[in-house]
Image (cartoon, rainbow, N blue to C red; front, side, top):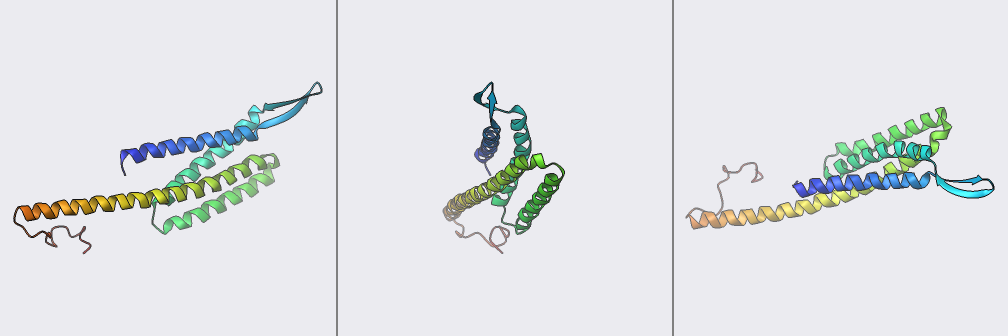
Length: 169
């Protein structure tokens, strides 16, 4: 993984949180009547409530999607159902205890699922793209080594003992 990917990851995370903040802002717009005039405004408390619920869930979704997308391990497949089950239980509990928080929590869970799916697919694609680039670099390195070995009078293929971990044996 190179430095460009690290900065791209930070950029992607910040964009995700900015989108979540924008969604929270849109969901906090309220219509009210003042002195017989219809007014549209933003409820600061509603915005903070939506943001307070959605931003942490978005951050968890982004991190889980990133790790799942880059991982090829089957242990990750157990993570997603466990997290979704946990959020389902938390939603049911909070909805029962405080019915007014259903909207922000439901929005947060929907955003969580959406961000998780999108980041998992995106970073799985990045993983495969980086894999192809890595294989191309390794092929070029192998060609350079073979030419170098031939130029100094050695057999172009290195002996098996030289690179046991990289020779696939």
